[in-house]
Amino acid sequence: MAGDSEILVLYGGNLGEKQGLEIILESAHLTRERPAIRYILAGDGAARPRLLAKTRHVGLDNIIYIDIQSEERFPLLLAAGDIHMVIQRREAGDLVMPSKLTNIMAAWRPFIATALPGTELARIAADSQGGILVPPGEGRALAQAILKLAGEENTRKEMGFRARRYAEAKLSREEILSRVEDLLYLLTSHSHARRFTPARV
Image 1 (cartoon, rainbow, N blue to C red):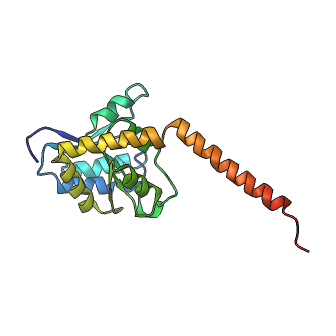
Image 2: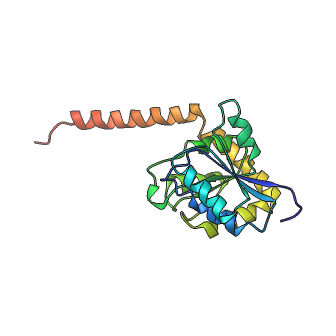
């Protein structure tokens, strides 16, 4: 990585048992010889005590845990991250679309997402060109993606710009409501047509 400027890799949200956050600890272990790369886990949840204990036991001093931020300070937290992580388990698939993703993209920040090809998260990463996709549960792949982005400041800026542009075009409140209205119209029209289609004689 060029220079010694600090790179903050941020995960913000629920530190739950279902997120599969051990991948972050594995990545931090693999990148521990790059002291400029520091990980921030911001949030609370059932897995936090266990993750914190493991972090201390292994001696990962490149991970910092901070509490949930207030609504006023949350935008500052997003802006502080140079690279954001959106972590999902393999079995999550399309069941959950992280709401944090819109906030990350709106903050002009690139993201690395753990998701399988074909999922909605993977589609947004590809369509926006604001994110990198890595396989769920593979800490080495996450570490490699972080090292790549950490060493390419211009790439991070370009990805952040594309993420913001995509969020404005596709993920704004107005755009989402418009898409929901279109979907509801199609569903109700289809239902109405089926209900009143004359039976064949």
